[in-house]
Amino acid sequence: MRKIAIFNPSRFFDLENTVSVFKYGSTIRSNVAFNTRMHDFIVVIDGGLEKAIKWHQMMMTDYPYHYSRISIFGPKYISKFQRFSKLCPIFYNSCVIANEKKVIKYGVISKDDLANALTNWTSPFVLNRFQKMIFPVGVIDTYLQSLILQCDAQTARLFLLSLCEDDIFDRIECDHNLENSSINFKNQERKVSLLEFLRKIVNSSYAGDIRFLFNDNSIKLSENELYDSLPFLTARYLPFIINYFQNNKSGFAIEGANLSTLNELYKLAKSITDRMAFNLMKNPMSGMNSEFCVSEDWNLFIKLFFNEKITLKLPNEFKSRASRIAARKRLLKLLPINILFSKYIYSLHHSALPWSPNVIDETIRRYNFKCSLLSVLKNILSNFGRITFYIKYKLNQTVKHLD
Image (cartoon, rainbow, N blue to C red; front, side, top):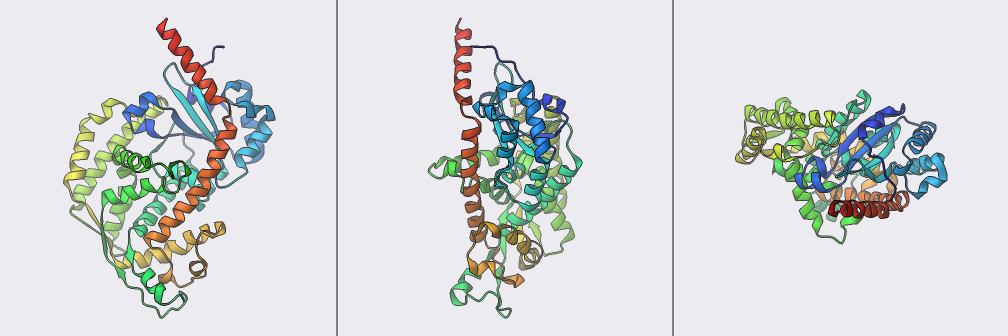
């Protein structure tokens, strides 16, 4: 077998059109996965077809072994293949050898497509990765950084809304005219734990995914990801919770913990997150090693998180105000894919907009299904032959080890 040169992800920045590089996936949240799984990256390149062609052309010249047999069609075809659908505007190269023990997979996405996905939620495939554990490797584009922060705020609002309860569906049974402004929808106050809120975010990426439709492991995988990601998700989303609580603009309240406890919890979570970010900046191939799980900050965080019964109270005012601000905007963005019933589509009355758990969950599920189906097909085409190459490589490494 011919010798394959190893590749360090920091080399992506040697190419002039590389904007930012992010690392995500199981290797930054699980010690077991860190030692056994592929390390996942997203490479953001300059927007536009011409710049994508130039980037792939340089990569195919310098690192031709990254590409599968699809490379025979040339960089122009690969760039068009990468960008042809907003549902999954990303091109993956898999099974790239990083060193003797580790392998990487990286997806290439143009900056304009990523900005569109973060702002308008056009691609669940991309969005699901940026809503959970993800870290920049090297320099991060300031514009993308601001969009990620904006997306985090939208994500927090959406999933708080999805945890609200109301009787809209009982009323629909009696009256289908949602444009009737005289209908009085009485929302019931809902109390949920902080853990349940974070679980909702993690579960959303598994809902409707074609890879888990006939696989009960999705529940187990989702729970494992939730608990492995707790400090990182807390550091990311707790500031929005604290902000709602401090401003108290919409009747939002927190029970079971005072503000100083929440700030202490955030401080511990931020310390763990910053250490991971620092390690990844120094070495992109680092991740969740054993020292994280036995650190003092980690133990203190877990103890405080589960000892305190942190409960989020979602009152009527939060529901109605959130609907006015977010519901129409987010709902109308999803209309072109025709996944909601017409009786919801034509609703213009703010308080009657269907931000109810089953509507949001069904929207996410159907949207994820379309996107995951497309992504599976794209990955099969773009990585044809790479799995066979990797198996041969591992067998060759095993033989060398035995010798």
